[in-house]
Length: 379
Image 1 (cartoon, one colour):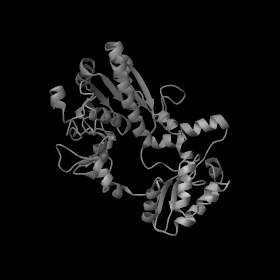
Image 2 (image 1 turned 30 degrees about the vertical axis):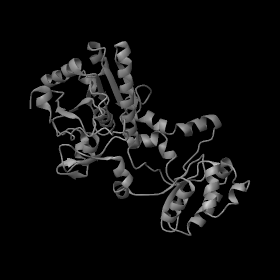
Image 3 (image 1 turned 45 degrees about the horizontal axis):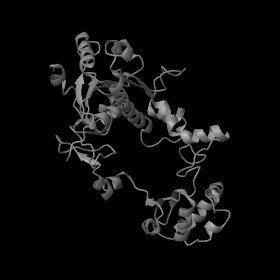
Image 4 (image 1 turned 180 degrees about the vertical axis):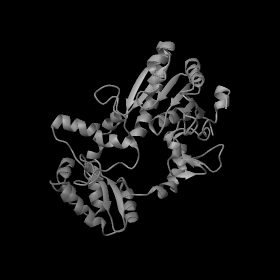
């Protein structure tokens, strides 16, 4: 396999824990950067202790910390703290941090202090509510931002209880934004010679996920609420029940709706003024959806998906984690990657390929303090 290492000339110091910071560091590491993860020598990253645990290590931690080096630094040990600062000043291109509010300032590891000595340094802060404003100093987690950032108002079934997205989408999304922003800052530094400060937050990421909902509200004064598996702006575009389970149908325009109706044996629907245009179908969604499900109830999911495929209508079965893991498409894409130094470890790689090659896992997630000797010359 050809190596994918566009960031191989850069060194990133990750003062990260839990999810958001580590995700950002992992993306940069698998794009070739040398990423040195810094942890407390006591318990290390909190994610190390989250279940499920296999062979003494958290699978969650391993899934978020591939391809990095790992060192331990006791911030209350002056010599170790000095070692870390010297590493950053002498070698680092960027720092990414999502520690508790006030920690980096307390130990002189903040952007202002470090960039005073090294103006070329790029420093990325990840917070909960944002760098400014009345909530700026308050800690928070992904699930809080799903509530505070409005996501729970558009997730779940109408009139149902608050519903969290099954994945930590604000953490992961903020880590992705961190990697994007750091790469942009590296490009800008190549032109100017100066680094800079990047501020990100879980709240800003949460708000960005509902940008279409907010734009709609700001323009019309109407807030679209929960749509279940559906969409407030397109119909039919949701999960439907067939005879033996559910499938997704994405008839995203009038042509696809006509094809959908033909597959269902209802060619009259698209010529009925009540359903001819998407806006009409959206307005009559509660009327149309039961009509579609009445037809789908006559046969199985696999049969319907085959018919929709033949007609060129986007449709698919709804699958679980096990089915995705065993899927031929997952295998063909090479998404599940084997660790080069642990024959029992398989993790999911970055969701991108460059010139036909997915960035490989460069090494297994580091055990606590694994690279102290290499980086600092100590145990």
